[in-house]
Length: 72
Image (cartoon, rainbow, N blue to C red; front, side, top):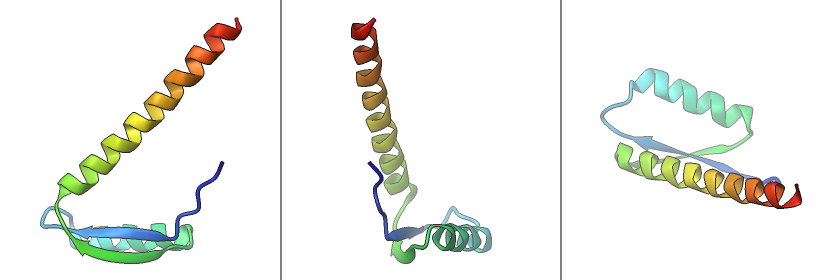
């Protein structure tokens, strides 16, 4: 099932290269027809989100593999 996202959250931090980051966020939001919401934060927010998404994908892949093994 496809999820429909409507917003891109742009996390302002001291690490990112400002001009390049702004351009990438704008390009992404336009490509997927999303609005941009800005907030202050650190890379910790992005890291946790990435790890949560990665773990979720790995869990789903593991469940599919177990199901496939049972079929054969």
